[in-house]
Image (tube, rainbow, N blue to C red; front, side, top):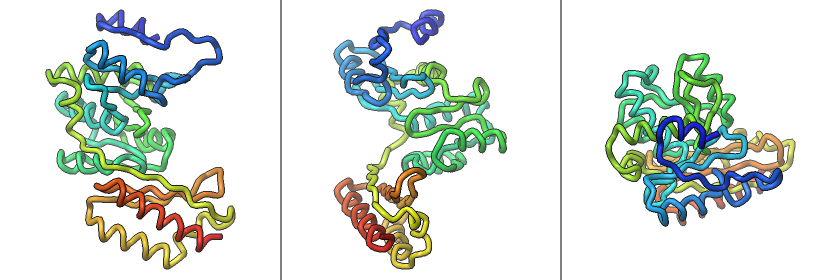
Length: 261
């Protein structure tokens, strides 16, 4: 479908991985495996590249240097484009709690409101419909442009991104630099099934989290999220130093495992 749309719009394109066999969906390609696309864009000196997932509702991009442009950066770029057109409803982006701290800082620096929801595009859409917002999505590249469509659409997302970058009249890498992403670490703590929601009641766990957030002073973030399907509590930490936050996430996860056996 992308080929038909790009051709109709007069976009110069090259398409790869478009020969399905019925069993090769997402196999070493698409939005979950960007390595091939990154190489292809650089080797063929293309302006940028797009990767969709199997059912086409997600889109991730890479710039001319083969660097990833994830969903958070895509939302930031499109938000600036829509606002210049006077079309960003209530100057607001809707994203999930998993969106990077860099997107939060971008919103604050640009006087935009960033609304957070639970993880899942259905929650993003619910908030958008309830409050009248028209741009939202997830870090994974599931972007909802409610003026056009009530669901994520990878091809629509890529067209909007192309439009925004063309109008900026700058290389994709420069346009994407409006957001500085912070390193993120996710560590799973194995707990008893009946205790995975009890982390909020445990004083030692709460104190350890509060201590970390005070230490970060706005340049880091701690997110604790029980798994909906497994006996796990997911510990996500963002910060400026990958090694440092990995150690911190492991320590919090270990504490949760000890207290919620």
